[in-house]
Length: 99
Length: 224
Image (tube, rainbow over all chains, first blue to last red; front, side, top):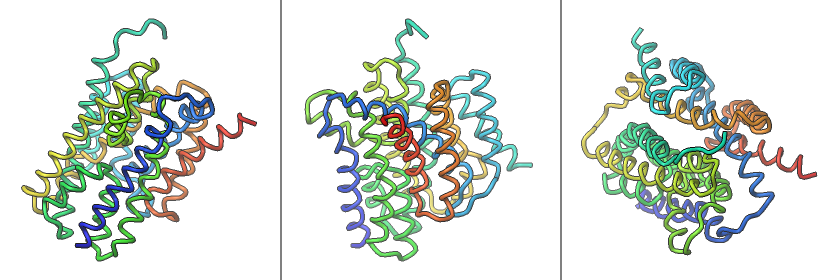
């Protein structure tokens, strides 16, 4: 029962957050929002990169994923296609863990 | 960069790569649900109706540890505050009848927003968003169901194969082209410094939101 309650609440709340801007703003251009829209993904994505690489719960730590991320950066500098960047990161991480 | 060729092929390839990258986490989510005592119907219910990976993980983890419904719900919703920001980013590109916007809104996740907003030409932003969101929706739900039904307890498989490095690499690849612009580079640097500083202190999800707040501060700064 608790799980069903959380499921219903989270589904409803999440949908309201997702749909607020598309349903209420529509296709209208809002200049300051456009400016913010250009900058927001940079901040959010950089935070996501760091948090998903260097955190485990509430602890910051460096593990094999850091090597994977480094390999991904090298692949990006070498202009590797998107799928190759991901594959290289996975392979590098697996190799480090196997050693 | 002028006279770009039709980017749809590249967009579809990105969408497919990201869908493959989230599939292992869908498996892990299914397994986590089983371990928390949820049925596969409940597990799939989360992936179909909530469709927000990190929030699903947080809510189910708290439920599994015996945390209350309020704590599980609060953690999940806090993680999803960022989808409000993603909505602001995508809203100008999601033009169409209200019912279509209502459907597209359900696909408002990190990856769809990243691919959509990365398109230089406005007319391809919606295409990138919908392609990526739909591909991930399918992969996420299939993998959740497989994880909940087929895999009992094999959580170490994902870490041993290095598959958990796929998501950070995918985020980095999506961030990369933005670093060509100096102001976005500064905002990214700010986000990359603020987020880890908050990891030990703030509830899960907040460090990522704080990264977005750096952008908010930067936008307010040049609006002065």
